[in-house]
Length: 104
Image (cartoon, rainbow, N blue to C red):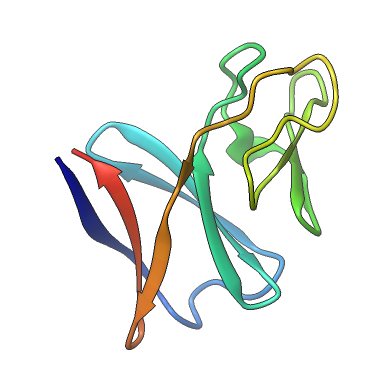
């Protein structure tokens, strides 16, 4: 069953920053893209590496192992060797709280 989980406070994550989060065993990566928040699964679909160690630039993150890039807004794989998208999670802001919807 999906539920909304508080993962951060507004102002905690500046534009251009990312934050890895463990949600009951689900590795999620939260991004601030020009004041909009996005969340994806923190795993490269090519080889399972955590994306949190990769370089975040604009709207994409690069896998630290082989350089595959993923769009953090849509989850789409942008470059080889990854061809499958990463899972995305809905994000909303309520007051000062940033919440992510996940199946726990």
